[in-house]
Length: 270
Image (cartoon, rainbow, N blue to C red; front, side):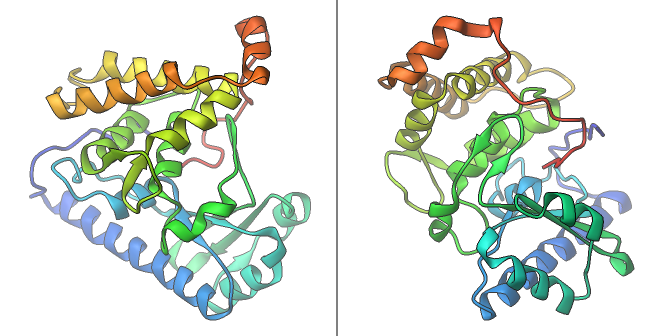
């Protein structure tokens, strides 16, 4: 998995300018897909690193990563509509992949622009399983910002690029206790983790890793009072939210049994 050096200054080199232009092209392509799907009554939402870039425009929004691939979230009962949407936009389905994985995931390729598209269906299955199909109404272009944050924090092999994405989301969005667009819903995160000990452990571990890696030269991100307070608040929310019986039972077993799914490096990379 490629590691990209974090950039905190205003892009000025030709390479950085090309990265910005590329990113804008990919963002535009993603929105074309979403709006074209809407016209057919099909629901698609952008997810992954591109969704982070769409949402975040603060001081660290120059942490550019070039996206040749685009990730979407869709609904399995709209399989035919999804396929028709991508075909009419010039994409070809990965027939073999879709044959074997079509109930949970689809792939499309647009060779002219060398764009690969992954469409997760009904639920996000990676290191942990997240189901936010009933929440897609909260944003008309991407998955909700709270769910986007969770897709980053659920990664067991948490790397520098994931830390950067989390920092960007936290810096550019306020914390709250309800589903307001562009606000991180603490209650939702707490409830999700209070039902699933494995998800709770991975998210808590990654929050602690954030505290360790921020300030390292590789990230070039320094602590701010606001960022530190948000990280602390999320951690306290996870720790104090009342746990369900299934969480308590699983916590007794602890890490003696693996608590996450094995995901190959690069698989469904967001």
